[in-house]
Image 1 (cartoon, one colour):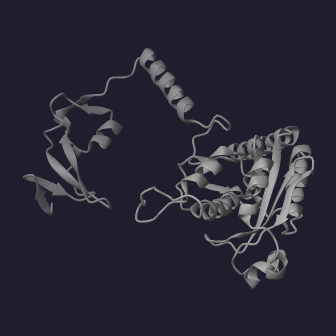
Image 2 (cartoon, rainbow, N blue to C red):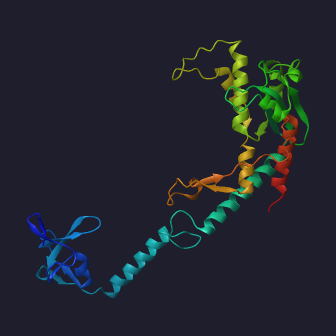
Image 3 (cartoon, rainbow, N blue to C red):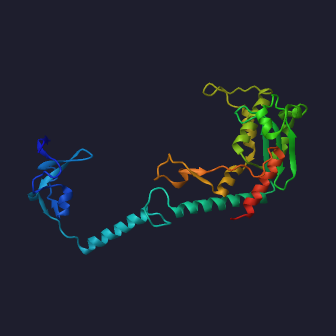
Length: 319
């Protein structure tokens, strides 16, 4: 004995007198505490490594543990089976953290088939068009220097260079090959807005990197409308949002799912995010790695054709 706790002696492991047992030891000996004895320990056992005190009880505080009846054993077995059924993986019938191989492969197969079905749906819909832009860079303020809209059968609805009104950085020119001299006499975005609207109206718009191109369109629309209509909206968090007319134009279009996201699911190149816990759903533990557009030439019309070719590959190749 080395100390007291709640006015009762405290023993270390292996030093408790014979006849004093923890509740776990009592269960192992086929004994159980009599009613009202749980709150009357005779001593304490200091337990490592969690540094807690386990109560010790004398044998005269206990009674023999009655044997379970066949009905109780059957109920216990049925309850354990129900508990297992509610928690076990429906694919491997095992309880595990996070995911199993069958679940992972099933997810890849389902996402692959869904992406292929989406591609077939897009190609079979004559109202679908593909849009692509080339810009002065990848930053938030980048301007459009070329835009193209093609129907899914390859018909060109719009294909034009655009004068962005700002110099084209050399880094951007090295990617798409468009120079300041090439766009010097090209129309501005405002000059093409009516034609662009006519190419997209009552159509479903497919874009390979949808979020990026929509942001570029938002920037151009904002510059277009702010020179014509005053923005009467109050600033939000100290900053003005894009012009409400620009938001209305974007909202009026029908945007299909991102083709890059669908192609990534079709390819099935999964990458894990190890910051997530294993017991979270599988789809939150990573994502599909985004794939570069096959056959991209970094010119707007050529990239639209590359998107159409990729959709055809997704729709016909089920491997």
